[in-house]
Length: 268
Image (tube, rainbow, N blue to C red; front, side, top):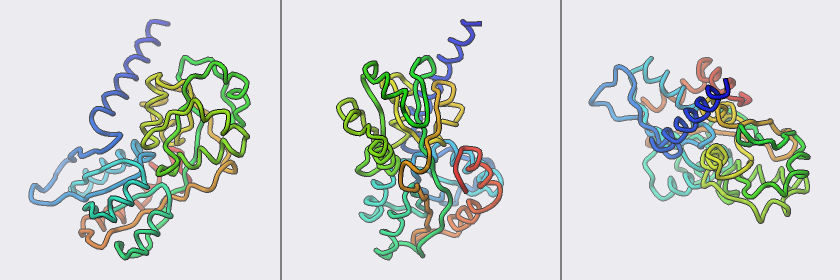
């Protein structure tokens, strides 16, 4: 029995690393059935907390419509700056609606977009860790001496990193954790630090913690929404968006896509 568990954990770790190597922490361009070869793909820039949920939605959309989707995942703040600098994108899904509003104010979008979900934070630790997990982080404080690295996304440009800092500040832990922080460029990379054992604990997106690929390697507990400003996630079409991008934008508002987001812990 124990051997089977160890094998499963190793397999899960290999799956996570394989997904990272394939570019899921940065981009995804997996073709669906029935692609039209002469049809330009829908270019999507999306927050990395959508890593697994959006991959599922994209696969369904491609199979149902034949439209190709080219998905690039990263930090919302970085994408906002890159789009302003000319990054060719049809659709932007941000983990912070403020970045969408900045693009709208710069007259780069068709409108001010739509709220597609509200995100949640989770405390996460490796599956084999004995660290007690609780929503108020009391166990983390009590066992802090045994932590050498604590992972969050970079608060300077990643909305989940900013929310993590707010939660730690509200719980009186920010000063304590700072010397041991390791910062991911985005929340998927911060999660990877914990999944691979590079960090003994961290704060991640609940949507990532619920994904089977991460759940096989970690334990988690959701944090109260009151610990940080709401993670209001908004999507918007850029002015150059294609008709296929409009179709995907509409699909994201439909029941199939919303059901997937709910399954990954988003409030929709």
